[in-house]
Length: 460
Image (cartoon, rainbow, N blue to C red):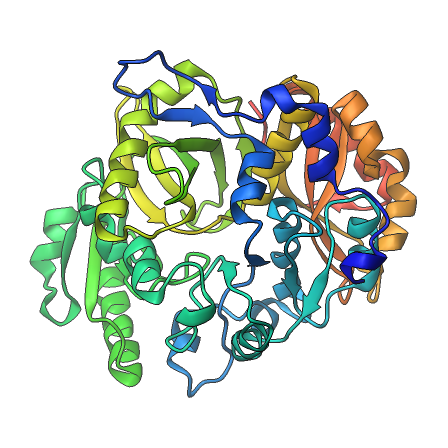
């Protein structure tokens, strides 16, 4: 659907009209406070900042065994079955301004999902491309720069908002000690010089060692937790063989397991407003027992008390990143552990949107429109096992809970994080008045839509 065919006023325009007073950044700290640059982000302000650029929320994947990227860039369709690479790109709808920019989607995207997102005003013009090479060529032909979750390859800098250089610095695990003075302890060295002594130096009885490679891997592909020296030797040997085969980065990071609550933050930066660091999200991360698989996020309210704990690490990361990458723009995320003593250990920063950014933006949308806090839980899976299931069928089962007017009036409902119509699976952004309301509402949804959620994490 082209811009001229889009009849519905976009959600950005509606919210901007509703909440002009809440469009400006909200200060968290008084002037003169060490954290005074940190503000609460506005949804429309972020969409405005990104509106000159098209949005593309898909990793630069490869399933070609001859392509070096295939060693560290997960191809979800090959790994998890048809359509599993469709679960991320629709999140771009929550950070675009329909009528000003476009969202780039894979050609296999369910068109009934697109029609719904256009009808309710989150999505405007869409362009379909398959794979990074086609995206680069298509965006270059259209003369459009593109804001992405990943770099656009060595030949794509002319159409990318953030260059390959900046994305490598911002996202590679070997850069964490350049980007943060709050990083977790680690050993960083050439993997071909690693010895058993490095295991002894990083291992604590009863805890794991995390072996990390440094090729800006996606979805935890470069993270390898090991429990014994035998596993350590085997994993390092496997990594060295892959590195030699593809000519990859030889740097390896060895990190002792950090004991603490697994959390994440996101801020938004732009060279246009160099002194503004807008806080987008503070979350609890739902991580599988292997220590790396992401199951979802619980988005917290952005209060002064919560921000104070991690605020120094936020500003430290932003200042270091901007010193190395002055033109960096967009979301800056970072995973960290909050220890029992209140200290913070940063371990995975990124110059990119995260898996939770769409949900965080939904929280910003509701709170800007209503002036009220809301609970937003990201990425519960619903699996119907119905091949070819279109999202319009899911909508019939969701009923009122899929309508923005109902969601805003009741702070309750469901929006799509992504939908795989090929396998009949969806990931939902679930909205409830408070976090305590999540589990009862999820149980109701299971009955309503006729599918069990595969997210079993408790919301405390």
